[in-house]
Image (cartoon, rainbow over all chains, first blue to last red; front, side, top):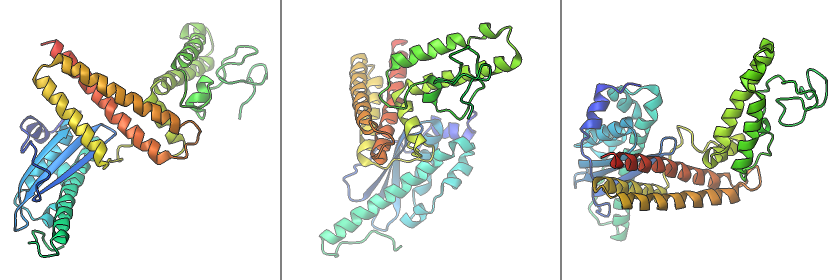
Amino acid sequence: MAYSEKVIDHYENPRNVGAMNKEDGGVGTGMVGAPACGDVMRLQIKVNAQGIIEDAKFKTYGCGSAIASSSLVTEWVKGKTLDEAMTIKNSHIAEELELPPVKIHCSVLAEDAIKAAVEDYRSKQGAAQSSQGGEAVSAQVAH
Amino acid sequence: MPNSCIQCGAELNFPPAFCHACGTVQPFRPELSLFEVVGLPASFALDPQTLRQRVLDLQKMLHPDRFAHADGTARRYSLEWSTRLNEALAILRDPLKRADYLLQAQGVDALGENVKVADPALLMSQMMYRERLEDLVAAKDQQGLEDLRTEVDAAANAAVEKLGILLKTLPCSQSDAAAALLRELQFLDKLQDEIDRSEESSQNL
């Protein structure tokens, strides 16, 4: 099976590889895995006080398509609001990377990872707010 | 259900590839489970040696040389049985595939392409194994790789043992727990492959 040029580009020059401190209240971490191919994916976002994703990092152990899908998503989410990030669909990723049908599940994994990261961030904010009696600054976008 | 020999009419025993009375190869039966094809009871606690011997014995009887002068139908039957036996050996000798086969038989798809894992503890441990592997490869730490392999093997053996308990009585009543173990085992299996590949490539440096 041949990879598209875009997949190869992301695979050879992955963007935003790395890790953030997941204990940081401004960081959301999403971890997902696909047992069928043994892939593990971690995607992290750093959200500023305006609720904008200002940085994103990923680490993926898996095939080229899984790496490319997560690399692409970190590029896409930077500068987006959390709600905008939640609208990313695996079909957009698959289309952009020209993934063949057998690799669609890799893009699904990347969609799940970004959603999990946003949810993690939101639950942290919710926990911080309730522990401070609801007076905490909200970095959340209305949803 | 063709339960008697097409040649002599004797009742067929398991495995039913041959008539035990007259030795005639029987029509292939695609509906039989892999366990039925090899003539062993469906169970997770299967002895790989017994399985291997069973398949070898049957394959000897199905060898194409024996059917060189047989008619086309008998040749086709023997080929069909033989192909299915190879499949049975490949799946049933591997604890991961055997457990998956048993769970699938009761409608549980633990490892399908669309199955996703969100268990944070499992994902975290897999991520840590992978990061450690990456560091060891970068440091060309051969001993470290071997230690990691030993550790992962122990984790895989522990998962197989736990699966053995859950799959002791079939159908498995705790299929969610068994499916979770199977997924863990699948991750460990892929990790073992990856460690082996890393060891090979570092030895070739």
